[in-house]
Amino acid sequence: MRLLREYVRELLTEAAKDVEDLESKDLYIAIARDKFIKIFYSNKFGYEQYSDDGSSVSGHIIVFKSNAAGCEGSWEVMYASAQPPGWGPLLYDVAMEVATMEGSGLMSDRSSVSRDARRVWDYYNDNRPDVTKRQLDKLPDSGIPGPQLTPDRNYDDCDQDVSADDKTPRTWYDSSSSKTFKKRPATINALKDAGRLIEL
Image (cartoon, rainbow, N blue to C red; front, side):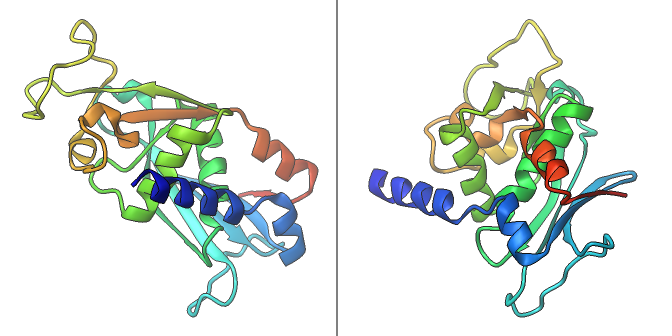
């Protein structure tokens, strides 16, 4: 199992795209702010790229300020999709930076986390020294086994059902979904410097 995890990490590291990859494909990243924030791959006019067969780059991530009480005021991923493989992490980085600038960080969807998304969150949790993680607590009387971690405060209490459903760790608080993540705007600044960021 440990060898499998290391192999997945290696694949994520090798496959993750960066600003130079955008330039080689003449792509941009657009940030559209409304009720939600949508971050997506676009052409130079800010129109979203689509690919039905996976032959070209497409993808977006939608985040919003969580309606859940507590959760340290984190933003939450509502939806994420990217193709071909390797183009999702760049969108996550930008989303995390936006959520850090406009809130207190980014956490996974509170209702469900796909296997692919969980691998991304696990990678942030275990392998990204440029990312700060903070442990969130579970809601009191949630029915999730184990004690509350900080019973004396409630601003970090958060729905942890997705963390309890994570079968990899031994306890809910070992799951990457039980945390919120912060990141300085290094990727956003690099996109601006390269002229590859469009803000709508």
